[in-house]
Image (tube, rainbow, N blue to C red; front, side, top):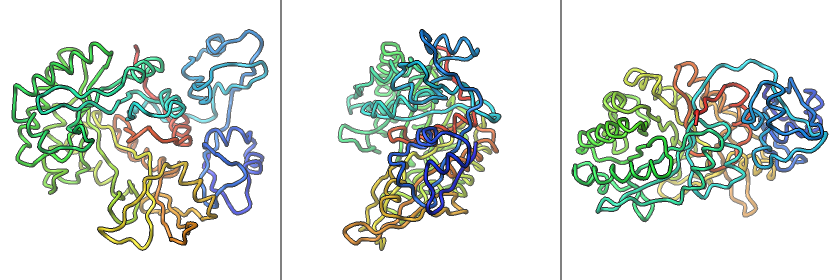
Length: 428
């Protein structure tokens, strides 16, 4: 695997010739929409097929996998277009294996809403260990608020990704409620009613675990929140279900603020089966322009986390999005727009912007002037920033990565993940 940075005047065809690979391989692995319009400074992942099979009459994915001692799932991972359309034709070339040695096994969790684009979903599921579906809430009376999740659960099983139910304090209006969270923490009867219903739904629908995502918990509810986690984990583990808890990105046990104070890393880490560090949102909707997950800041969070939580329990969060800010930034006025990472590159190419790379944050960014004359700056993720984040994961020997979220296309991320790691899969 190589990472190529596009220079002025370069084309996909020319780059493919330079590395001795097919142009179509570069297009697919990087999700390039318009091969005639690359952005200067754009990062491309270049993969080198080592074993290639040419499809013969009568062959199926199963028989081809058997021939090479591999699996159909591996064929999906190495040929991502197959997940959307597994139809084979005579003469079609399938990559059986790429050149290069993988680092080793890794667990990967991806979060998504039920309305995820199915083409995007099929690209992601072959490379997930856990698939967490957002999400279940609960009413003030303790009745579950249920999403339309049946199809996603079925597809998770199809690709051997463990479907995980998510419970949060998000209300019917779609916002995290400190008050509603407090209600369930303070009432044993209410939380048992909710847990009873969770267990029924998990058995009924085939969920294999629960993700607890309670944000903006009041500091005075810290102990009650911990008791809720203990109660939930004890009851679910007894039934064979795992529990993951999402944690705000702290750098010390005494960090102040509504996001942080009730998230006691050491105590929660001792109870939960796994945790997700939400290591993103330094650059955010209402904040000043900067990287969403600058690796220097991410590393500070992880450095603290491994002193408080067993490293083999930790998923490190990775953002699958960026932001576009109109300049000049004005606090309280400017509202950034969420961008998908592939879309960000398309915008850079459209406006002939030069993509730069911040070495401290290990994140790409660019400036452009829109048609209305406004100056913008965009911070996003590419294969270089993803590589830097996975370096933090491997340096600290963490359990794996957790993507918030899997909703947007990011082909080169999944190509990188497949090139570098053996993603753990659930035996279902």
